[in-house]
Image (cartoon, rainbow, N blue to C red; front, side, top):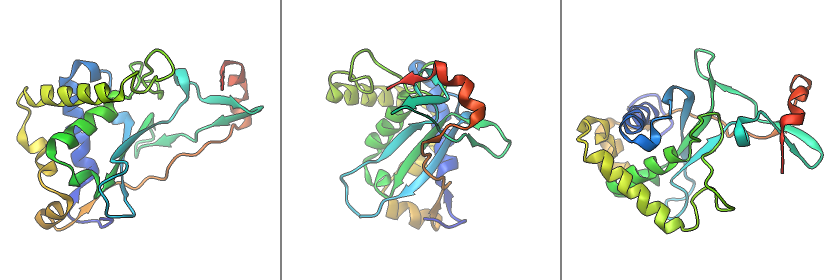
Length: 206
């Protein structure tokens, strides 16, 4: 991983995510052109740990400014090569993600896409109550994601869309001579600049 030849994991995942979003009604609001996809290398060759994650690039309700501890914060905008602002960062942790069974890989992809807010405003999808991310039962949530992944497969999508998920990371490298993908720094909160101060009254307090 980290080389410029072999399989472009980010590009393959973008095509897969686009098809999943188009076929599953719960994900029809997702516009993949405004979602950045990166690969992150896991430090230890163990199975437990994070497989993928979704980072919203705005705050609750799509706000650009957050009021916290008597200060105003923002997330520096992320742009694609055409200058269009991206609203989400979708990360896959390799090789750990690739070393799951195919069904779990697809479930993980659906899981992360599901977290994209239905208003597609840079915020997460928020369920009622304190457990807004997964609801009261995380186990039930994961079962629903597996069912949605099977629903996608039942629609007979082109096998070439997900062929790159067949096998583990070592086999993937052997087939393609290597694996690479976009590397994007993790966004961090920074003090809001003066030109965002006018948004302060709208910023959500936490």
